[in-house]
Image (tube, rainbow, N blue to C red; front, side):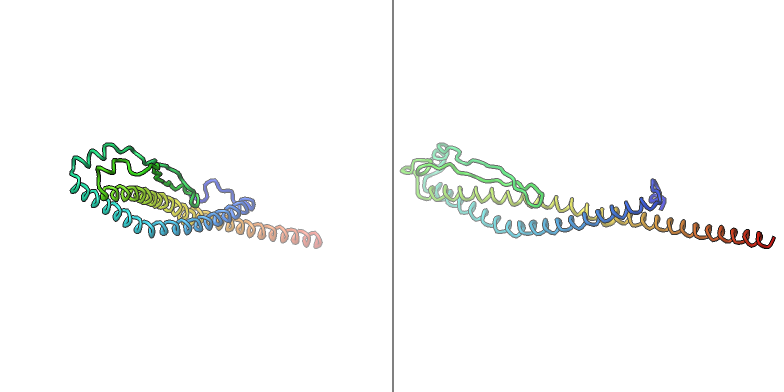
Length: 217
């Protein structure tokens, strides 16, 4: 209670101001809880999607590596290495962000430069290498999509934790303190009203006694 009394003036104006601040805090708490619910919905949506994205990425990478291994068997390691050295980097990384309920979610997109045919001499390689190259392009795109979802989950989890702390602070610290202070001021004002009432009664009784004494004399 000593903390509540610090800097508090138990007046009706202070009481009205506190009641108004309490209403604002309660409304803010309601809005934060709505935001928290919306963040949780988005979070679990990404959680549901990420499992399928992880499986797809792993499958594409597995298929690509298998076909590269088969290409190596048919071409030989040296020939495969020579083919790879002539391949230019065609992957362009495009980083963006999108707003999800006030949270900036990073988004990574892989763009592949278009070329005619394949980036190596097809007459000196095999169809397995062509398939492996195409699979690897799909795998890289899938991994980028997976990384975007993982980053989104991290960002949303941080936002959820921060919003939950703010809700708890309002619900268990700020609003209860306001309520305690309001009750203290109300009790103080009631006590003052009772003192004023008894003081007026004493004054009224004294005036009546003085009036009776004057009449008797």
